[in-house]
Amino acid sequence: MKKFGEKFMLGAATSAHQVEGNNIHSDCWVMEHLPGTTFKEPSLQAADHYNRYKEDIKLMADAGLNTYRFTIEWARIEPVKGQYNQKEVEHYRGVLNFCHKNGVTPIVTLHHFSSPKWLISEGGWESESTIEYFRDYSRYVVSELGDLIPYICTINEANMGVQIKRVMEDFMTQGESENKNKPEHGDVQVGINMDMSVVEEYYQSLGVAFDIDPRQVHTFLSPRSENGDILIMKCHEAARRAIKELKPAIQVGITLSLYDYQALPGGEDYVQALQDEDFLHYLPFIHDDDFLGVQNYSRKVYGPNGKVEPNENTRTTQMGYEYYPESLKGVIELVSSHWKKPIIITENGISTNNDEERVEFIERALNSVHECIEKGFPVIGYTHWSLLDNFEWQLGYSKAFGLIAVDRITQNRYPKESLIKLGDYRYQEI
Ligand code: BGC
Image (cartoon, helix red, strand yellow):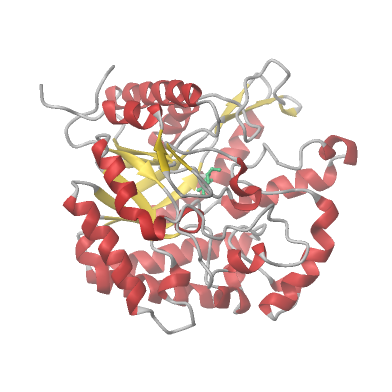
């Protein structure tokens, strides 16, 4: 086994809404409880990480991991527009201090899909005012906690709304019979439920819940318009400027969901268009960033007639997409040919109930990372998704991405073999 260099950040990632529990001021919480909700179940207590973060960070550190990527949840910090909650700031101060005490470098995400409910009522992720709101929240977090934060990812998977729009459009143009077997859509990275039978009722109740026209409900995981796409990048830029003004030493970046798009002869134009939409057109907005967060789970193959669907022999994960750990290599190579600053693999992982598959996945994915580093690509860290089995958005608790299993009744933790195996890759003095 090839170990990483001394300074390499090796760890695991979570997001607040997926693990903390009781994120009651968030838009997700609202949507999970609506009549006709598209969420298969509500997040409720999640993995109770809010109360058990010490145990979780300790398990990670004991396994040899030195980095933890987690979210400071906007809906907790600013549950009401303009009113910051000091008690929640102190909670996250506790998490950050505990990381440092245990030799774990924190990478903080300021927004990971869930938003404060009020933000959506104000127009959400298609409204210009969000630029100012996000900047102010970012500035506040850094003014309070900046001394404890070495790395910030402003926005998680800034391109997810664009990917969701693409999948929705494909879904609408495909025949009913083609779609009915895949309401859990393997074509989009994140857990969304495409069971259209419930959508109409849900849609109406959304407008009531956010007290606006349902057509104006724009959460982070809503299909994104071209304007909305650029707006998100403006939020990022405004936040980066605010952070740097206060604490220039904090390393700031954004994260993108990137598939390894591979072209068979004749599929090159599809691949080029997708790489542009998912990555290349963001380059001007991230030019002044310190690092790029790369998130990758699989590949997609394109031929002369578009996407080549996996066949019955293709090995797939619980999420429905191809089991292909080497996709990480393709993505790092693509990114490195356009981006010369540090890269952190902020997410990479697999949903499976068979932990041996995860162990194999980690081994193959990390071999790819090693190969890339040997070629001189500036990969400085890898945080596996995810530290804990958690709430996979609209698909609820049915997917197991964790290095640690969580008993949903007792909230007891059960570290898996994959946690130990991942820790083994950490640099050790011989
Ligand atoms: C998201 C996570 C999600 C993971 C697995 C990523 O797109 O950032 O929140 O749980 O993929 O689907």
